[in-house]
Structures are given as C-alpha cells and as structure tokens.
Length: 222
Image 1 (cartoon, rainbow, N blue to C red):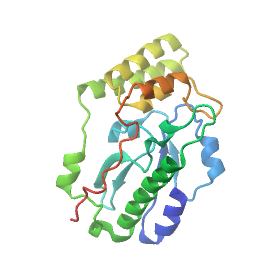
Image 2: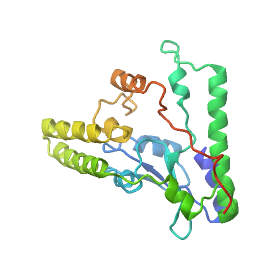
Image 3: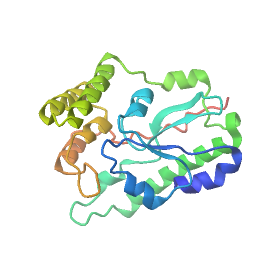
Image 4: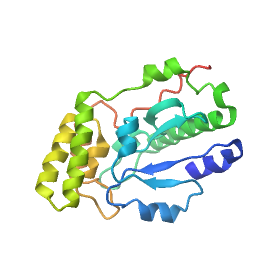
C-alpha cells in the first residue's frame, strides 16, 4: 500500500519515510523482502516515538516541505479488525474485513490528496488545528522514555533482570505505549509480540480501541 502511494505521488516531491521501532532489527528481513522504493529506517532506541509521541505501529505524522507538522501522530489506516478474528481458524468476518479495507483506502486517499494538493488539501490542518490535536508528553511519559532508554542500555550489557524492571516501570508510567510494552515481551518466529500476554492486554481494553481511527472528517481546508 505504501509503495503504491509512493509511486503515484513521487512526481509531486513527496516521499514516504518508514521507521520501524525495533531494538532487535527483526524488521530488517521484512524490509528487504518488500524492497520498497522509499527510505526505510530501523530506530533501535525509539527516538522517533519519543519525539512525536508515537505509541503504536503503524502511526504516521505528516510533515510538509518546510518541516512543519501538518497532521500530528495518528493511526495510519489500520483498524481493530484483528480483534474479530476467530482464534481457531484465524479468519475475520467478511464484513469486518471489508470495513478494514475501506478505512485503509480512505487514509491512503487522504495522504495522496495532500501529496498532490499540498496546503489546499482539506486534510491538511492549519497550525491551530495541529496544536489542538497534538498531545505533548507529560512528566510520566517523559520519565517512561528515560526508563525505557535505561532498560535498553542495561539489556545490551546483559543485565536482563535490571532491564526488565525498568521496562516494566516504563510501561506502568506510559500504559498507552504498545511500542514500549512490545519491546520487552517475548516475540514469535516473525519477531512479533503476539502471544497470550498480548491478547490478554488487548482484551483488557474493553470498548477502547487498540487502533483509534484517524479523524479525517473533522479536517478543514486551510
């Protein structure tokens, strides 16, 4: 999907920049297999997450040619369709799958509209709207990132128990960050933390979304 977007907008001086939050580089084989035409980076230290207050993947931040944020961090076209998956057959109902595809297409179309039309796009927010949507990290989130960096440093030195304690505290301080939680939990053969602990945490959300939908309807023309 992102490759198609990149190819259809590259003549408009637009590019996609993908950043994997991956301390172990497990994302590298996936990137190499996809062989995308746009830049793909691996952020071992979650610096991008800290800078833009990203809490999950995929999330996106729109940045214009002047380096200004046009849309702050938001879910990049994903939905909670996976929560309707049958645990035995691992299939998703057709209606849910269709809605998931619609949500993804709508988001990609919005990005494409902005790439082509720039500031004239109805999806491009003005500075006031950006500030209204921007969520700045509070003291708890700031400490969580500091704890997370310390945990990573300890883990790389082989001090696993100390690292785990700081990973746990980081998650306690910033429970909305699935990126932090995921980093310190067991991964499957694909490099994903998708075992029983993940599903237990998802179920604990109740009616709250895992992927809050991007607010495209509320966007206004500049």
